[in-house]
Length: 216
Ligand SMILES: [Zn+2]
Image 1 (tube, helix red, strand yellow):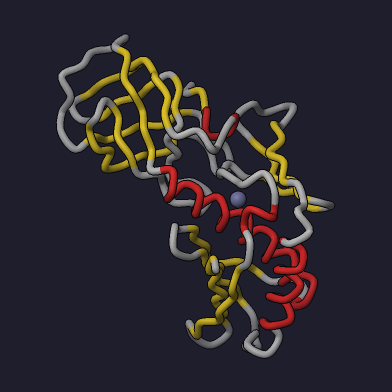
Image 2: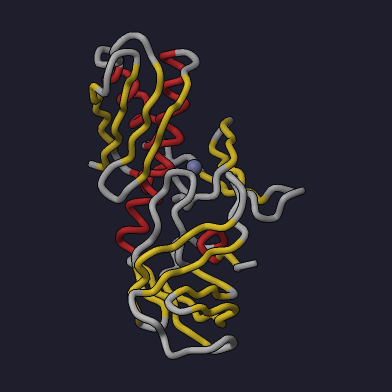
């Protein structure tokens, strides 16, 4: 099981780790700062042993992250037990953290205004986050109100806590104010770090809505 430093300290961009498994270009390590695509959040970008990571795959069930397998650009001349340095692009990580936290908070303000809706897709990248859901009427008219409430909430400097699940060590709970949801992603500690966001609606077909979230 990989020790997830990105949960303990999502602001840390470097760590050393020991190789626990190696097969060609694919390796596993005992601890990591490098997040693997999960719950809609994209993988980090960075290097292990100075070699670019081209793919990071999460091993575990839907919400938990048990282990991560990294694919390197070239086959490393390394063996099990070797120490390696793990490094990520912290600027990308910070954008992912801000957008992931914003996406969760946006969800609750959308729920408040729109009532229940079924999410059919979501993605958190470094330039924008998006959520796709089933809804019969375009949300264009109500989006400015949701955006204003959301930005007002962000400016209140509310705390965001990632709490471990008492029964499942590989599951984390995202908690902010009265809200709580299972989430394995990386998040800012305070809504003030997100600063201001912008919401845009995209037309993706009848009965479906897409809301995009941008950092300003
Ligand atoms: Zn999440």
